[in-house]
Amino acid sequence: MIVGIDLGTTNSLVGVYDAGFVTLIADEAGQRLTPSVVYYPESGAPLVGRPASRMRAIHPESTVFSVKRFMGRRGGEEVSGIPYRVAGSAGSPLQIAIGDRRLSPEEVSAAILGKLKADAERALGVEITKAVVTVPAYFNDAQRSATKRAGELAGLEVVRILNEPTAAALAYGLDRLSEKTKVAVYDLGGGTFDVSILELTGGVFQVLSTNGNTRLGGDDIDAALVRHLEEACGFQAPDPAARARLLEAAVEAKHRLSDLEETVVSIPFLESGVSREVVLKRADLEKVALPFVEKTRAHCLRALADAGLEVAAIQELILVGGSTRMPLVRSYAGGLFGRTPNCSRNPDEAVAEGAALQAAILDGTLSQVVLLDITPLSLGIETFGGLMNVILPRNTTIPCKAGEMFTNAVAGQSSMLIRVLQGERELARDNWELGRFEIPFQALPKGQARVGVQFEIDANGILAVLARDTATGLEQVVQMTSAVEVSDEAVEKMLEDALENAFDDMNARVFTEAKLKAQEMLPSVTKALAVAGDRLDDFERSRIEACVDEVKKALEVEAAQQLKRAVANLDESTQTLAALVMEIAMQGAGPRRGG
Ligand code: ADP
Ligand code: MG
Picture 1 (cartoon, rainbow, N blue to C red):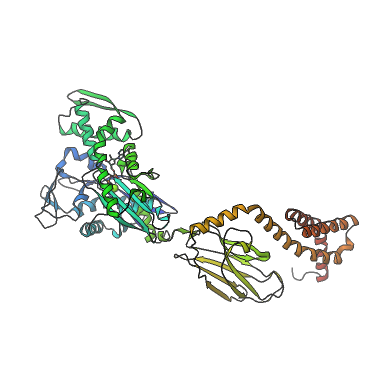
Picture 2 (cartoon, protein in one colour; picture 1 turned 180 degrees about the vertical axis):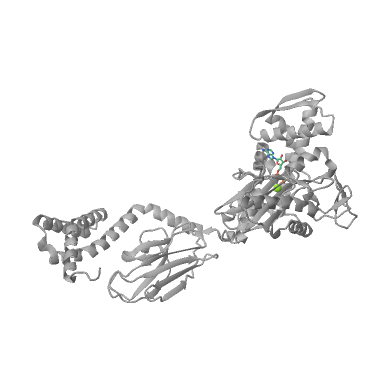
């Protein structure tokens, strides 16, 4: 079993695909999001996640957060905005300094991955040794290798490094869209903003361009909201512990205001016995947040320019990252790309979901995403009476395989013509023929030959038709040369025609089916009357004769419904006759042997 992991700057998640859907794994406290925070006590094992977050206020110098920023980085580069120390001379790998200890960013990330691995193992009851881990699309080789090493340190083989926007697009099922679809992924997380333009090519997402800001996200909004609470609302935080409480209250209020129009921020005993309470409106928060949200605009425009695309070329906009839960961000991003964003997944879970899907594809639980295409029109063969017999209905997911058993219409027949058809019409002649071939089979009485016909469409949309005489095992496989793929216009025309002719088509099918049945019944009723007619009373015999006349009349005037009814009546009226014929036949065969 391979798990999918979103190793985020602010939050990390682990998910697994099983039996048709992705489950994101909750930890012992029931939380699916694990803050990407590690606290290193002076001695003993580090704390990871929520408990570590709590230590941030009290032991800022021993609590590492946002370590993702340092993955694959070298010393000597400017580092700001963190209370813990980093070390490492220019050119050598950057290290995090906690007291006398020196930790590589990989080691810190490994602590987070180790916690996710343990959560998954506890929830699933199996050992987990493999994972798909996501990284930002802009990560370079060094950053990707560092992520892989972090996995190894945690006892996880990283079987695939997956781009975050690609993972999100997978979670949204966008891989099922048509070729060349262009998708914008707008990801505003806690500390970073990324925008990526993807294009679906051969079922795989190609990153056309990526842009962003590694210092822009929900944290900025939090800090600005704290300032607002201090300056406009009179909250005072005299010491680090009080400041931590104020920040926590601000973040919680921000989250609530994504759903509510207003909320109360209240902090008891913030400063020497004084409690504070204020009503905060969504509009207040939006005023505070807008300048940060507006900063995403330039990045989006640059990403579009780098991809060589006008905004109108974008067909899908998906929002990723917890901060896109804010209505302000949703409408702003929607405005930038001129379309309503697709928000059907949880924005802070989409990346992990996509990673879990990719993991399932790699371990074979889920068929290759590349192949999740569909048949544009139904596929089938012509059967008795010139009818279309559908084997693969329209909109079947490719690759696919289905089959049906057919028999001979005529006694002594020794081959069958297989006409492979595509289309939605009831009559074979109104559909398109993709190909034809003969399958020979052993000559047998009518209805006793067994010819299996199987349709298989492979990953490339190529249809192969297999026909097998099940008596002899003799088979033929013919690959259709014309593709199953047809132009959108042709599909549309076929669907329109089918709709327009639906009534006539259905009538034709009913008539043909009833006619076949009538042609089978009439001679056998005549035969049965000759054998057992004298055992019926007059009333019953004349009733059967009337039904036979009714069938013949309906056949003559080609009235479908009338024929169908007549055939049913005939069938019903001959029940006794059929039983008598059976009885005579059994008497003729003598008493049954054995016992
Ligand atoms: P990252 O990808 O950076 O690890 P996430 O996607 O988990 O981070 O986003 C975390 C950010 O999302 C935080 O700033 C958090 O405050 C913000 N966030 C989470 N839920 C909400 C919400 N309901 N409303 C507004 N912001 C939210
Ligand atoms: Mg993220």
